[in-house]
Each structure stands twice: as C-alpha cells, then as structure tokens.
Length: 423
Image (cartoon, rainbow, N blue to C red; front, side, top):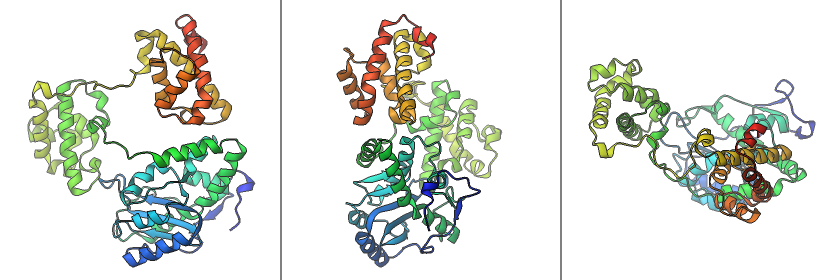
C-alpha cells in the first residue's frame, strides 16, 4: 500500500479505507511456546517496534492490559493475551535496545510495566502531533490527516477482558499498530523540518524515564460531584461509601462506577439516611445492584455520621499548590499581576511556535512561579525554578528569559495594570 503522506490532510470521504491488516488478523498468543517464538522473531526484526495495549476501562477494577499488540519489520504483527501470558519481561528484554512507538504512551506504559515491559527509548506519535500543533491528535484522526488512511473505528471502548475476543475486535487491535511506524517516520521528518525534533526527543526521554504513578492521597476526593459537599461529616459519609464501594469493586474486579455511581454516593451523603427504607427512597438507589447492597451502604453511611470529630476530613485538605487563581486579585493582587503577565508571555511563545500552551509549560508551573517566585528574579533563578518543577531543557531555554521579563514588568506596574491591558 502506497502512503499518501505527501498528499496533505484528507477527509474521510476521499481517504483510502484501511479495514484489513496486510498480513491478516493473527490469533492471540496464549501458550508459552508461542511467546518464545514471538520473542525470537521480534528480536530478529529491524527498525522501531509499534506497541499498543487494550484495557477494560469502565468495565474492570484494574487498569491492567487485556491485549498487547506489536508490529515490527521482519516480524509482522503479534497479538498477545496477557491473561494467559502474564509475564512478558522476556519480550521486554528482547526489545530493550529498540525504539518503541506508541500513541499516547502515558496511557499504556503503566499497564505494560505491570507485565514486565519497560522501554528505554520511545516515540510517542500523539505527543509529536501536539508539538507540531496539529489540531487533531487521536490516532484515527492523525492517520487520516498524515497518511490519508481511514482506520476502522468502533471498539476502543470495548470490554477487552471478554474471552474469547471477537474477530472484529482483533482486527481493530491489529490495525492500531499496522501503520504506527509509518506515521512515526512522517512525524519525525515534520519535527525535524520545524526545528522541534530535539524538543520531542527530550519529551520522549522524560516519558520513558518517568517513575510509576504514586498512589493518590485520599482518592475518594475524586468522586464526581464532590464540590456539592460542604460539611465535614457529609465528607466522612462520602469517604466511607467510597471505601465500601472500592472493596466490592476490587473483590469482584468490576469498575467502581458499575457497583455504585458517584452520583449515588453524593446524594446519599447529602441526604444522610440512617435506614434502608430511607436510602431506597432516594431515586439514585433504584437500581437492582444498589438495592441488593443497601445494607452495606447504610452501614457505611452510619460510620460516617457517627465518626469521631477528630477523624472527620477537612473540607479543603492541606496541599502545597497555590490557591485557585480566581481568588488571587483579592488575596494577593501582586501575584495576580505576575500571573497575568506570565500567562501572556507563555501564550505568545506558544502561538509563535505553534504548539499548545500546556506543552510549552504546564499551567501548574506557571501558577507556582507567579505565586511564589524566586527571591531574586533573574534568568538563572527562573530557569532553576522551572527545572525543579519538571520543565525540560528545551522548555527552559524558550521560557526562562520571557518569564523573567514578565515578572519584572509586573513588579514595576501599578496593581491591576496587566488585567486592564487584557494580559
């Protein structure tokens, strides 16, 4: 199949449909002997290896991989069942010196690490698209816009823990890695032409070296709708219900939202019923599964309502991040002026280099700099601040001097002048 990369962006109407892998749809590997053969084949292959993983988000409790797809020149495509073959460290070792090509790598790297696969060198096609300022960075959209192929759609949100996996799903999975290296090659040339290839390499190296995500503190605080809860005892109810739900979900390996929706947790905390009939009178507890566990939920609610005062969670937990920016004009007008100036400087740079602001410098880093800048503001101290907060060298080189100038100007302007200018 001839690439249409030079033809420019395509619409789906005139795109070449790409509905079948070139070598057919391989059967998932499930036996140790099959894996050994695949390891040898991929070790003997040439060039980068395209890798993808399918999870069962929204269906299962864990974020583990339920299918791993690989393609490499000389080895073809392999689909591996990590339920039957849970240790892929041998494959990871065989590909240790090979560049891995992934799309949105940060989504797949944790589940690949769980089964023994960790890259030392990678290329993230989604991140490359962001650095190039592409308006659409989903895999299907990028393959269409860059290569002119219309990939099959429809199974991204499937329950990949299903066994056996249906043939249409396997075809979709194989197609996800079919042209990933081809996409990578075109994007690399575009990055080189735009003077951004070294930026991308720094980003990719940071991704490959990133440690596993740390466990969240108070994960129950991520309950959707929690902003409606303003009393500590009601927060305690949310915490107890969340933990009860989490235990059921973990034991059954079911997505927590399928056990009890977040909306039901919030409504129960607001109403705080102490009896099963009162709980079931809430409309959000009308489902069969929620009614079946009504006693469990009421017990959790009572624990929250009866908790000792000293154990109640704070409405606003302690944190080391700046307060919400909307409060700055009243709380610290000078910091608000610095933030307006810093955002304007970063925004102008992002426009100049045609990339999203958040890929030039994270909004959190900009807020932290504006809220608590170095005692002595100069290019060196600002650069050091950015490095301490995770900025890569290419980001530091681009932003340290403009941010220093912005902070200096904000410090010399009358309060509110930056806002009046519209910065």
